[in-house]
View 1 (cartoon, rainbow, N blue to C red):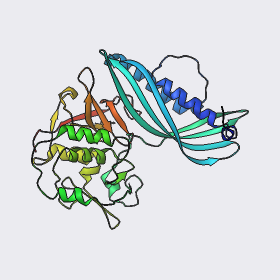
View 2: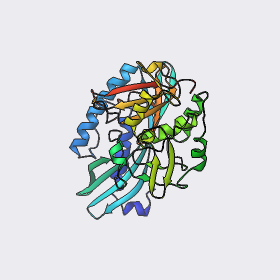
View 3: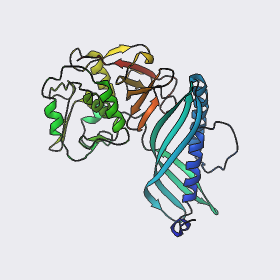
View 4: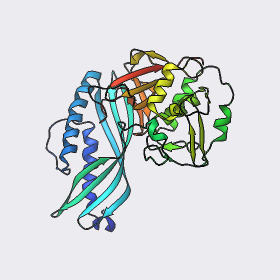
Length: 340
């Protein structure tokens, strides 16, 4: 039964059709006819390219798609008139696939801004904007500007976690607790731990928290360009190192640090273990823009990762299903030693 409120908002039917097609596209890659609810040609071109690439990717991985379930939530209506609507949509896609007799499940949450316009008696989607994208990193230069949108944290209470910071003032030399790091990653993959600040571009901040949960020792210097540390948000000023929250600085720290938190760079993803780290340079220009943590392995022994910004759980490590990926993408694989 259609509610009376829904009858007064016929543009929502376009959203329902879009979500259904979005869900089907995760599994079906054929050219079959479908209701053309989207008229954004740039989006359609990119979607077709991505679907073609994903189909080949499944075959290469020996993966059989089983089903996809997409839950959509209308988060905000920015504009609503008789002829057009602009609304933000949250899409939580749960994808099931089979490999070597084992069923795997991955979760990806994305947010999109849709522009819907009246077309006679119907409504069509003329614009789709991805609100979160792995391709847009948090930069060190941005973090120096309190007013920079990409750097401004989304504050959460409490603003400073004294327990976390106090724990980091003492040596935590010991064994890296990989299971604890992965468990933390699975617990907080969908949302931010309220004890920490959350960034618009949150991937590296999230990974740093996971490593700390695995008993990685804080290296506090008080200098944003040195060490690996987090103190909180104090007196309207950010107190954390670039390496804590910026992917490129994080990669540089892992690559050069010789005590405390450090890592060995390995050549292949299958050499990684639970709680290890992958960083991504989408353009191959030497600047890393995204960070993930290994939280599981598929039936072939390849790593599955968790991430923030586009929140993901147990996603295949190479991200070839991402709009950020291209032929120039370069990966760096970091193995965290068993002992600090």
